[in-house]
Image (cartoon, rainbow, N blue to C red; front, side, top):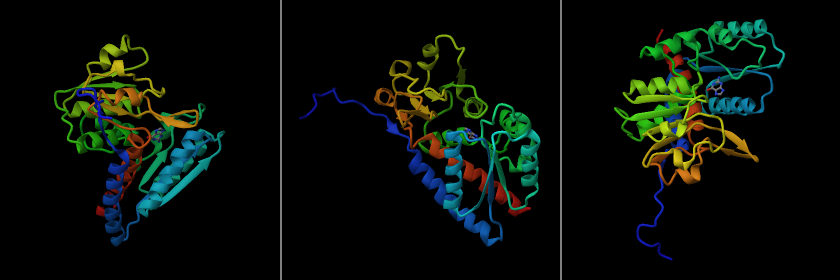
Length: 292
Ligand code: GUN
């Protein structure tokens, strides 16, 4: 049956992380081949402490991506009662390993470990995640440095779709060091007017409804509902929540998508970009080694 005129549900354009990250990976494969031609094999080391189930999946996916690219990957699994000294000794060893270009400590670490101290141990040149204080500082000061993978992937998606950013209102929900704070800095760098909301924000919807670009990094399933979103907004969903065995984002996709101009799906959105950006950081580090 034909729908009555004007009744058709508008749907946002999908920002497809699967397609985009596949393009990034294809491009990286060529760069890896060029490096191999110079006798350099990029290498990534991932350290996983404890047995957090979500972290195990992320770490496995990172290893798989290395395999796809044909680069060296080393996963170091350490028990949940690992001491700070033991963790830092592994980081020290990897800092000195000439075949390793990127080191990543999967977060969160078990509570008894000092996360900032561990991240500070990674030499900035091998800081695949961009979490070292030097790289954080460079981001804050708009200087080139290694940037965190999820925010970098978000900016890659926005730019690939030619979404205008300058002068626009960007609202970020979440203030983590991994996503909220760095993506706010990157949006500011692109001349957005940026608001960072968090768990103590009063009247959250009054902020989110002003957003031309809305980034949800909350960690709560379907937290962002249609009434919180402005018509035509670009909605970036960073959430990976497991509900009844299904992965869902922080955005109520079904009801928000008809209102948005662009939206990222979960799965198949930002998560895919995080991994390809990690590979990009690693290949870039290897290219710097090759140029030495
Ligand atoms: N845990 C959740 N996201 C990330 C990430 O991007 N990097 C690391 N190291 N740990 C994480």
